[in-house]
Image (tube, rainbow, N blue to C red):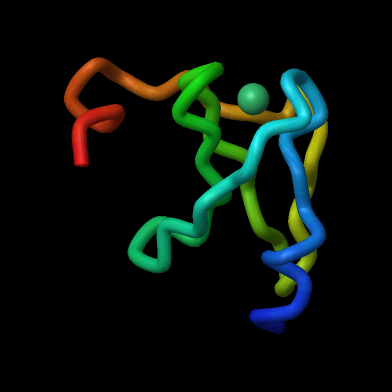
Length: 60
Ligand SMILES: [Zn+2]
């Protein structure tokens, strides 16, 4: 995935910064506890496509 892409993507819900989980290929918003999928290198920043994180996953 293009690194520059990560610098411009923001959470569509809170406009906060997202961080990329390489292992799961997801963009994570800790504030909303949502993980957005990355499909074929393209972040899908849609709230209804996001996965809710479990309590475990919100801890670093
Ligand atoms: Zn957010």
